[in-house]
Image (cartoon, rainbow over all chains, first blue to last red; front, top):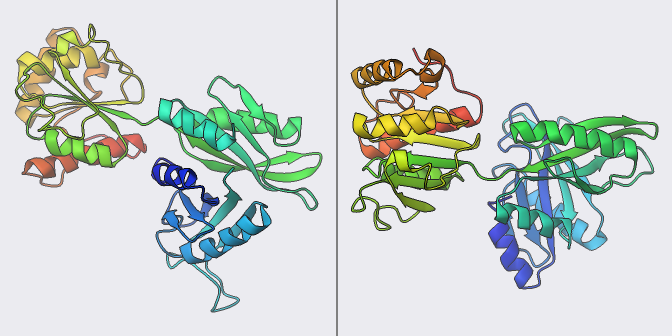
Length: 103
Length: 249
């Protein structure tokens, strides 16, 4: 949290609409720990990381949906065998990311 | 004040706080309920039922001892929930005895790793803001004066003794050994370490106490330059922080 806090505070001062994404579960090898955070704004800014670069793009999109719906959401990412187009982690692990609007 | 703002205040005051969030709920129950939990067991808000709140508080207090964040399944009459407990611990402190050349990169690295840093030395000319721009505190004192200076040593404190001169590291260890510090490391060769341990034994310290000292300090990476030695020390400190340290030799 400490890593993203100063930026979030700047955004709040600028009146940005912010969503906070947090890694809440990891399975197998995962690039970031439970509690790792990434914040995004409706205007398209981003700080922090939930996976060291693998799923940030997808989390950003989900966060935009969360900001529109105002409803928190749990999203799971991992190795997917069903579809080559699914978003996965190269390390073979899985993560669950909780995304909520920052009040 | 929102939960976020309360958490931010606690982080700024360097006080422990945790947020429990329902991240998975049975069909028909929405996720996102939140509760703040404090180390004394006090709570604010509710996850939706007494079973969930009690379960989450128990898990949170346990997790605060280890400082980390984790998701727990909690079974209630309503069904199976998952509660994410996010602990926001105060930053650890690195207490450095000796404003010597190795302390300069060490303070930089420790700061980068999220530690608060305090450097203690009785020699004002070494203890300058120019040498330690990142240090949170520069304490001008001899080791045996730090008790009077009110320097707090708790279980979230990591002590590094860099003076390698028995005049200074003796008193530094005298205040460190009875403390609940999470880590005590002292610089010095194997010979210096053996001599120091012998002195501590004669001074009446138990083997158990002496064994708390990591010495020679740092993990073995063949470090020679000050920055390299600082990396080896910081690596050992982090290994202790994450419970990965193994007994030496």
